[in-house]
Image (cartoon, rainbow, N blue to C red; front, side):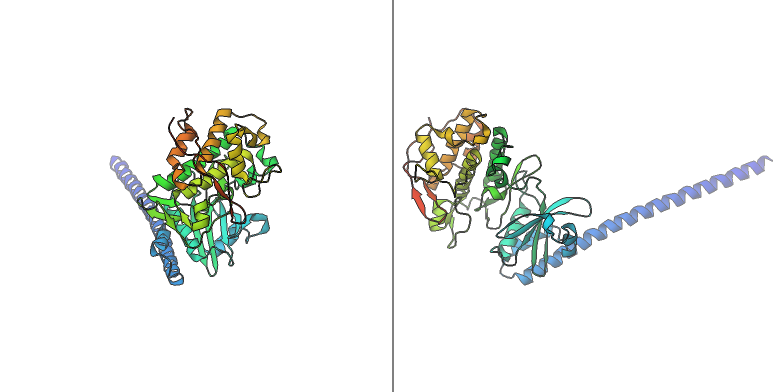
Length: 397
């Protein structure tokens, strides 16, 4: 009897061990299967990206290989996927449109919301500019720069997939009286600081030094928390090391009203060109007025000249947006106006660097004073220039 019980227990133990062994084998096989699927997925993605790169090199042989190889780190999406995400680029999904083409809201299969920038076949931004923008954004990572998620090049289509920004662009707020009322002073100041931090990163803190060349409110996007992110790097220039003090082009491109005088008249651009554009943007954020279409019945001065005149007369606060209802810290607003006037000086050598701009914005004990230095020359919408009486330069107290 005891032998029978022992035999039964041995058989039961052996059966249990076999079950445990089989379970272990099944688990190992499942894990190996998952690993192989992941490996194959990564391999397919890399091969597809490499094939995409080869196609780009064949289609755009004149484009720098550095710009194309930078795309190896980016996911490549097929056109069918993008069409599904945007409901075939429906009007209901369109977020906006510019000279480059249109931007659509989309949603990927995993639920992630995206912004799809679809370049028009007739866009002035050609394949070189498209690849330039892709390669620039791919190499840069900063909280105040728009994030690139991937791209699609199929047939004649050139598409960028970007992070979706719930509040669209800055210009949709500051020029609209109803929407501008949503921007109290603290929010405007935070936007100014955010743009400055993004520019400082581009000019100094990133491993690549980048001159944006088309900084304007429509290229400043706002996320759900109204944090600003610089976008649209189609005409940006990348420099390695410190070889970006000054350069020139025979074909100045950008937007009138934000282009520095030396760039508009002679095609010369530098980091200080972006500083000029930043100064104009800050004055527009403060005032809610557009530099290009500003008009004042009692003066023939343009916007920058008018602000300059008010500063000289001690009346700078008159430009502050009425929607703020005089609810703002006077000293902080004056410091921002003063900083902006320093940024838009005619002589680029007298404009501050972005690190000095950040110091002026964040230091309550302002170490700079305005002095008469030269004339502010600012561009009109026709591309001409007007000269005003006075400008400022940085000097110690």
